[in-house]
Amino acid sequence: MTRQALLFVLLPIIFFIPSCMAPKTKGIEVDEKLAAIESRKQKQLALVLFLSDWTRLNRLSYKVMSHSVDLCKDDITKGMGAFFINKYSLADEFREVVSTDMKSERIQVFQIVKASPAEKAGLEKGDLILKIDGKSVPEGESAISEFSEIFNEASENKFAITLDVMRGTQEKTFSVNLEPTCNYQVLMNQDDIINAFADGDNVIITKGMMRFAKDDSELALVISHEIAHNAMGHFTSNMINAIPGFILDMAVALLGVNTQGTFAKATAGTFSQELEFEADYVGLYMMAKSGLPIEDAPNFWRKMATVHPASINANHAASHPATSQRFLALEKTVQEIKNKISNGQPLTLEVNEGEEPLEKTGVEEDESSQFMNLLN
Image 1 (tube, one colour):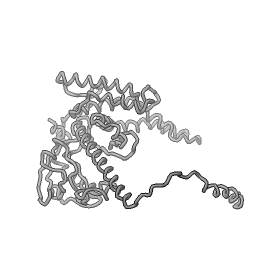
Image 2 (image 1 turned 30 degrees about the vertical axis):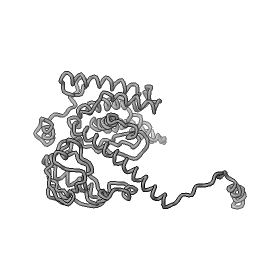
Image 3 (image 1 turned 120 degrees about the vertical axis):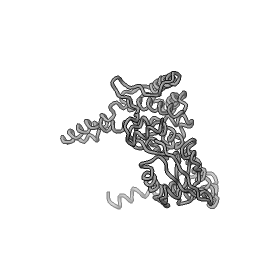
Image 4 (image 1 turned 90 degrees about the horizontal axis):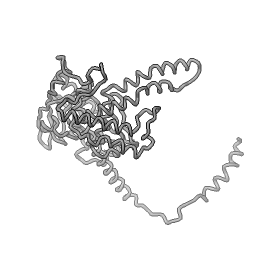
């Protein structure tokens, strides 16, 4: 098309623009200064909700992971039940509205889990961390990651550390015992979609799931399910299952056909529904071991069915089981666990005939067995 022809086509459109539909009512004039004040207020409200969600997620995830060590195999670390923060832990839009006591570049205690070693040692929210075992703690943008490295180094061969803190205007020193915990990070992202997933090392819970799982028992069920995926090695299983499909994709590619990974995706999904059932089963045991209520856990899937009706009926091609099946399976698991508790039996997983028990027990005198001895 020539330039003249293009201009001929566009001119009528340009002349039509002024006649497009416009508001018929008198516009409301908004004071920009007041809008800025309101913007700040809304950011403060969003921050309050974010911190509340974060606190709730930390509290439940630590409780589950510190009571599920026997199921996490070699994915074990040491923890104290404290969570730390500095101003760089927050998104840019929150830093400008955060309270003064959280604007420090120094690392401070953000949260103490109830009945944790940190609480028993006397640490409090707001304590500024100065030293770990006499080694100064850094400040600034990379302080949290550097702090984690210092903590891991200090706790590598022992089960207690010394923390020097600043509380108000006073310096205090605390000896904090450590306890074994599953070595996974449980994180929250800001997606509004109702979702949660695990990648072998982390558990990600969306903001949408936080809104959906309003009751702590519901959220604990989701967290436990995803931790179970990691503990049972499901992410690795999916990768191994994908190998035959990947080889087939490559073979077809040699014939000039791009499958876009279709066969790898298909074989990766082998036993995917069975693995979801297993994560439900193991996750509920993790909840029970943590002392969390499990009686209403099956109802989570009835609630999920109300927002995703398509998930109610079984579909063998789907990656996840039907919500109806998951409800019934969890009901049976609840009864299985309650029977064991009533009979004074240990909460050990029921495994297929010929399979080794999945719970790890401390039998060798290595560091992992020392971890297990702490449970006794």
